[in-house]
Image 1: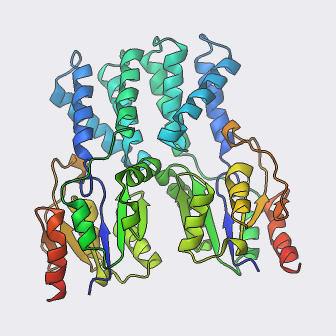
Image 2 (image 1 turned 135 degrees about the horizontal axis):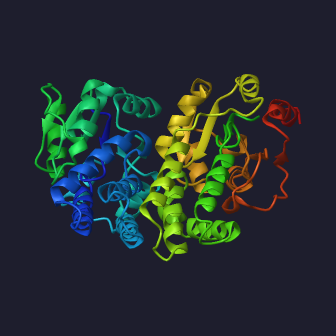
Image 3 (image 1 turned 60 degrees about the vertical axis):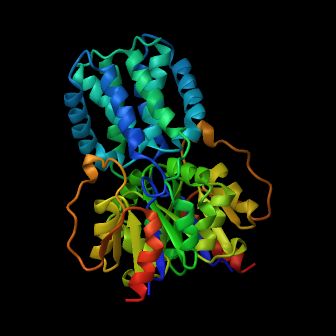
Length: 230
Length: 230
């Protein structure tokens, strides 16, 4: 029996990564006098990777890493107007409406016979804003915003909700964050790919009996029925 | 009976605001060619206030607001080196060791006969880092990091831990965040002032039967015994 279902939010319930990629495109265009777009994007990723441990996930860290990249790429010659524009780009992201992915509301209806836990990572305030703006908050027994989606963090969440990891299923678009850590704990890890994947979220597809891959969240209710009918 | 005790973290268990004030001092000194320190500090607070809803609390938002203030105060003429130095100041804050306040460990020992919940707000990753670095994590039944310390947020925490607000006591250095919202819910709100208070945390001392003010956390165990002995 699956006693509780965890669902990722960004790129599982609503669009997210595509806004980062659009902003990155504008950022590269702004600095095009200084370097080729590919070079800029690769410097940005290096700086994001180096900053991950201090900033964590989310838009504010992305903004700070863009500012740092702009300074480095221009040897400090970047002007205040460009930095101001970077801040605006980030602030626009923080104010962006929430675009639900197709089939989400219907799938949540179909899954409503057991506790649903929204499990996401990123900026606390921004994630809370998106949950509220999504109109989906009432569908969830709990909303858990984590600094990182490690096996330890999932174990803490499951312990707080009194759910055995073996009775838990997590579905999301990131193998690294949504699937692999839950498989490690003995639960079910369901991969629902969506759009581009951020380089720092890349992972190999696991070879595990409790791993499944779906084309969309609409397939999740039937998958769970199938698992339970064994 | 007080069934659970909530404790704030920043400036209740360890130093915090004083590092923000030191950084602000360095920030004002960096821009001293452009304006008087008081004027810079007051522009920074205005920008922090305007950004609070989008950035929330914590060091990353503070960094972004310092960058924005530097651009505005210089009409965009700020150079890349100055912006780079602002990022370094913030990164230093994010790496700063945790300095426990006097009497904290002893007080936590004395309070260990009931569940202690650490309740804080700010950047998720930074707060988790500080809890780990404090060496105090094991003393707490739970660590709750909130986007904001509203009555609703406290009510959610207490409901998750199955604690009636009337049986809950919260202690911390901020009237606005630690004391008043808990009094509103019917719990005990204990004010333990420490050092400078950030302008955006200012609030009037409440006039409520369950409000108390202490000189230090060392006085908390005796206060609780006094409350329970009626």
